[in-house]
Length: 132
Image (tube, rainbow, N blue to C red; front, side):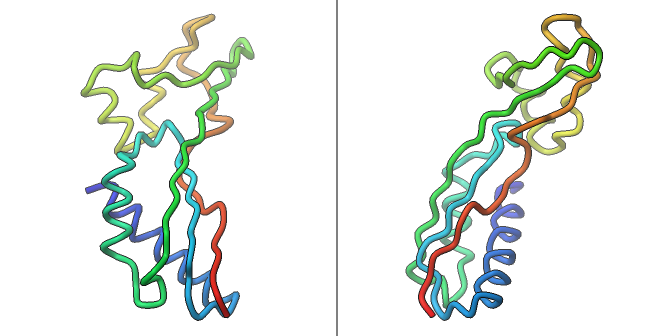
């Protein structure tokens, strides 16, 4: 269900941009999803296809992943988020509330849970193409 909520937000934002840019038809939307968000790409793709409004009728949605980079606030170590190192329940908790990552993920160098997400969090629109 999380993917459906994200799809609604993507459509709403893309519609606002299309209106602002005076696009009568949207043909292509490129979306980038942060790896930490752990979005099921197939479900998001399906939700987008089901929710698209009339002016998105022929729109293609391209979804790409952005690697998540974490940086320890204690020792300065930087590392990549690895979903495969998490058990199923932990991965699901982070999927719904990414902020809980601090409860489950620790710096591999010093063990601190105090880190920042420097790249690859959330979902954003990379581009929208259409016709005026």
